[in-house]
Image 1: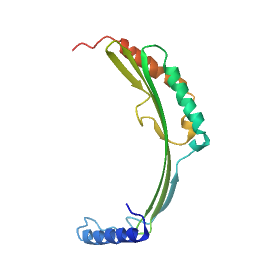
Image 2 (image 1 turned 30 degrees about the vertical axis):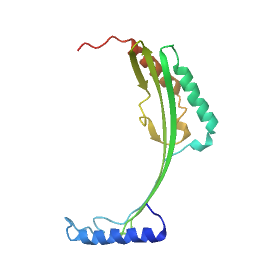
Image 3 (image 1 turned 135 degrees about the horizontal axis):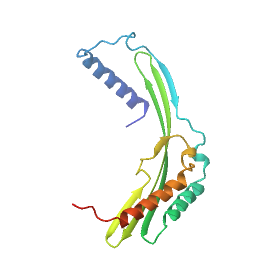
Image 4 (image 1 turned 90 degrees about the vertical axis):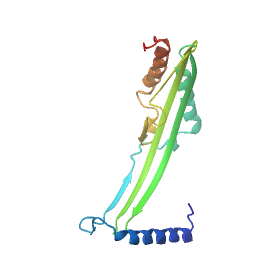
Length: 167
């Protein structure tokens, strides 16, 4: 977990020593013919960085989502959630391979909880990280967003009103 030069060098030396000890147990010898050195780069396609949306605007959207789901007094709780994760990875190999990857992940979710007496039911738009995709802000306010918001609230109300399943 330490990233100072000495610690990184010690980690490289330990990994090299471990690989050398394990090499005598190899099932297959890899040469450049089987594993040629490759160079690759990958970046998530982002049409609009999430950072381009001010925090207040994003929070405002989540508030409007929660307010819209309150279609009935039976809706007792609503939540909205948005998250962005940027991940950078670089792989270098002893055979000369180099790979760089940059992922931009955007997640949005909202849920509605309905209650009728002692019956409580909850619905969400896929659950936490159920709608997590590579991209940017274009994944937040999509053309189908408000239809999904209505569906989540409607399904919570339908479930709380549904008869019990027979055993």
